[in-house]
Amino acid sequence: KAGVTQTPRYLIKTRGQQVTLSCSPISGHRSVSWYQQTPGQGLQFLFEYFSETQRNKGNFPGRFSGRQFSNSRSEMNVSTLELGDSALYLCASSEFVAGANEQFFGPGTRLTVL
Amino acid sequence: AQTVTQSQPEMSVQEAETVTLSCTYDTSESDYYLFWYKQPPSRQMILVIRQEAYKQQNATENRFSVNFQKAAKSFSLKISDSQLGDAAMYFCAYRSALTGNQFYFGTGTSLTVIP
Image 1 (cartoon, rainbow over the protein chains, first blue to last red):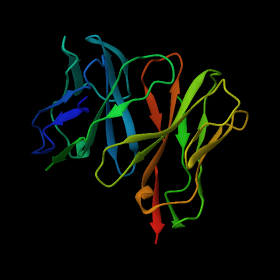
Image 2 (image 1 turned 90 degrees about the horizontal axis):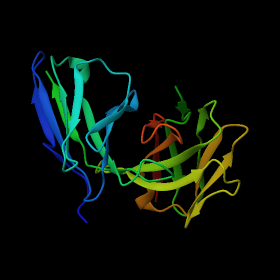
Image 3 (image 1 turned 120 degrees about the vertical axis):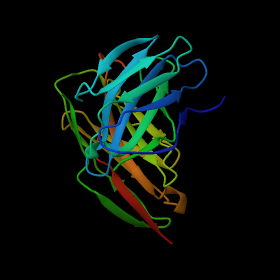
């Protein structure tokens, strides 16, 4: 099976703009989670989607939003970008939402806000 | 919210030697799962090992093993016979049995393997 894919891999935006990141999970995986990774904070949970429904949401402002489509592909959107939004955004997919199931991570999208 | 603490930002180990990475966590829950993930310089995170909290036996995967101390809320990773390919960022993660796939990660330990 193909792994988790994320597009684009790199993005450069300016403050105030908005951005949309895309994630395609492993075939058959219906759970998709998003994380923000920064050097100082590590990985911070953004949100999780399962079967097109948001199941969990992390402590991020409303500028961060996401959605999941019927084919399990997911997008996250960040509006009114701030310098502090510069980070690596990781998407992870899982087959299940219970048990010690593993999350499979994509390569990430590197967002730079100027 | 649960917190995961990795107190060693950087560690180094000689090739073929053993190294232990520390992780502690804070939770009031009794049922949860713990994970160690590895992130090599290419950035793709991969699972190293996992532990169910209800299991007393420590998990082992080849050269990787954990020391799970539930009462102390400690979950350390031991890497035996270290290899150059073990060089990476290692993240400890916690997942509740109640809240789906919301993982809480530590800030990571950067492991250097010295030839």
